[in-house]
Amino acid sequence: MLKSNLNPVKNFLKNDRHIHPLVILSVDILIVFTSFSLAFLIIGGFGFDQMEFVQYLTATACFCAIALPVVYFFKLHTGLLRYSNTIDLFNILAATLTFSLLYILFYYSLGHYWIALNAKFLMLVLLVNFFINSTLLIALRLLAKSTYLILVSKFMNKAQHKVLIY
Image (cartoon, rainbow, N blue to C red; front, side, top):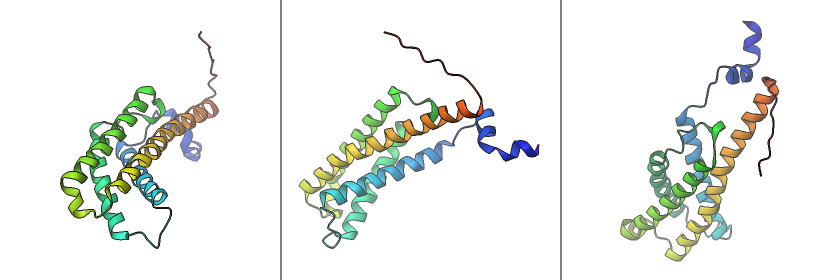
């Protein structure tokens, strides 16, 4: 009993446990927030002194509020990270494109009353954000899958046979 508690990673792998979907959803939304912030800073030229902080917070909060239900309904958080595949990657690209387009629709319908940013600036932010966001979300899945495969081979002593099919 004492020995099994000393290695929680091995117990995690042996019992076929997984990370709760709400944790994955939270990490995904954190990535969405980070990527939008980074895109905002890149397009703004890292001009912290020129940046309107309230406008930045409003734009980011609206973007995350739009992204949350899209990520939820595209079920990006429900798949096991260790079994990520190309279908998950295409879902990430589709979800990122969807919430970017929904944000544009929101901005031109109601958002321009609350978000006093230049539309051209905001479109550039969304373009850069699309690439940063999709890259980070895909990288999270690939990193989790690679980590799982490395840990399984280390702790479970399972040999992997690599086969090349051509």
